Image (cartoon, rainbow, N blue to C red; front, top):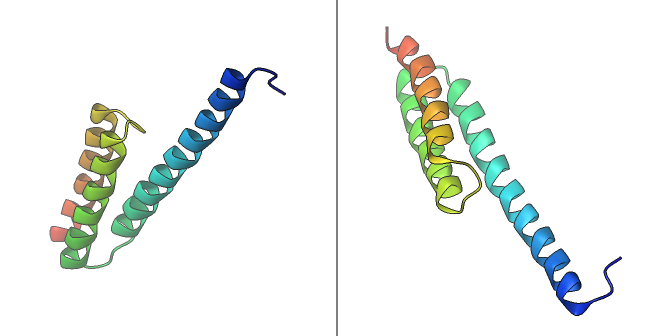
Length: 85
């Protein structure tokens, strides 16, 4: 348990950041899962754009790194393009 006011504030900040990061992570993970489970190519394409939006927001807020988002999106698009054939 922190004794100093600065330590208490730091603890509050860490909790808030952790909660926000977890929210962004849950959102982009769910978006990726939905897009990956899509049956038709058109549906998957729409869901992929939602996943991209969620990934971009996570990058903007510093939850994940830019290259991580790019890699995840690339792998998702690879799976979706299989439906096209």
